[in-house]
Image (cartoon, rainbow, N blue to C red; front, side):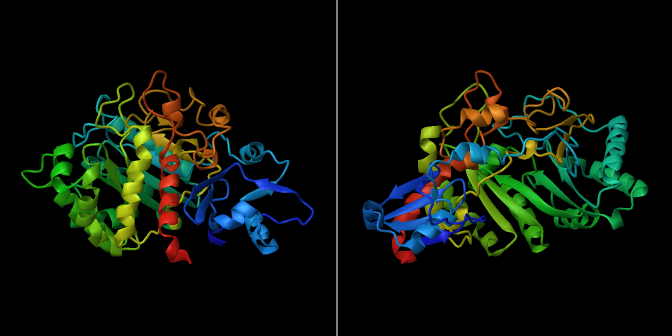
Length: 427
C-alpha cells in the first residue's frame, strides 16, 4: 500500500475504535491494484487488491488509512460531520473587489453569457460612487485585491487608471498590501501595457481563455484586429506576462467540435510549461441556460473528455502531475459565497455573482450566503466535499438544461484510471 498524497489534516487512530470504509472513498480497480481517492480528505492511495480482498492490512497500514480519511469511525455520520464545517456567511470584511468597468467586449464568443446583456460602461457618476465605496472599505484594511472583469476590461484601461489614481489621492496605497488581477482575452495587452499594469495596477495575476487551435480560436473569438491573429496576439501577451512574473491561469474551452484537437492545442502552447507561474485549466463549455446544442459536451461525455485531456497532459512537459490534479475538499463553495468578496457592476451596484450582476442585487438575494439547501440535496453524493452542491447560479435557474455539477466531479474517475494504468511507476 502506498499513500500518494496525504490529507492536509490528519485524523488520530484510536486502538479501541471500530472503523468502516469512508462513504467518500472513490475507487478504480485494475488487475492487481486499486486506486483510491477520498473526497473529504483529498488523500490518494494505491492499494494491492489482495490486501483489500483479504483485509490483511498491517496495523501500520490501518493507521495510515485512518489518518488520511479512508477509514472512519464505524458509527460516524460523515455528511453531518463535513456539513458542520462548511462556512455559510453574509458579506463581511470585504477585501476582494471584482470590478466590471464595462460589459462591452472586442470579441464575439458564441458561448458568452453576457452577449445578450445591455451594454454599459462606468460613467462619471458611477465612477464617483465606486471610488467612494472602495475608500470606505479599504481605508482600514491592511490588504485587498482589485479584480478587473468584463466584458473586456482592457477596453477601459484608462478607467482602471482613473479609479486607482483617485483611490491613491484619498488612501495612502503605499501603506497597503494590495494587488490587481484581471480576466481578459489579452488581445489588447502589448508589452507596454503589461508593464503599465504591473507598475500602476500592481497586476500579479491574469485569467485568460483560448478556444482551440489558432484557426479555431480566431473563428470563435471573432475579434477585429486589423487582420492580426487573435491567437497570436494572445500568445504574445501571455509571454509578456509570464516573463514579467505575472501568474497566468490559461483556461482552454472544449466542446464536441474542438476536443479532438486538444493535443494540437497543447503542442502550440508548450513553451509556457517551463514557467512556474503558469497554470492550465482545460474544461468544458457551459451551454446556454435553456438549450443544449450538439456541440456542447453533455454530462455522460465529460469523464471521457477528461481522460483524454489528462492523458495528453501526462505525456507533455506540463509540470502538474496526475496526483496533483485531484481536487482538494472545500469548506466554502464558489467565489460568490465567500464573505470577503463582492462584484461591482458598471453602474456601481453591488452583487455576489459575476453571472448575476445585472439582475438581483446584493440585498435581494441571500442564496449565496446560505446555500445549505443545495448541500442537503447532494447529501448522498460521494463528490459532495469537492463541490458543495455545485453551481448555485445554475441550481437556481428554473428549467435550465445546465447541470449544477462542476468540473471537479468529472475529473476524479479519469485521474484514478490513469493512476491504475501507470501503476508500475509507483512501485
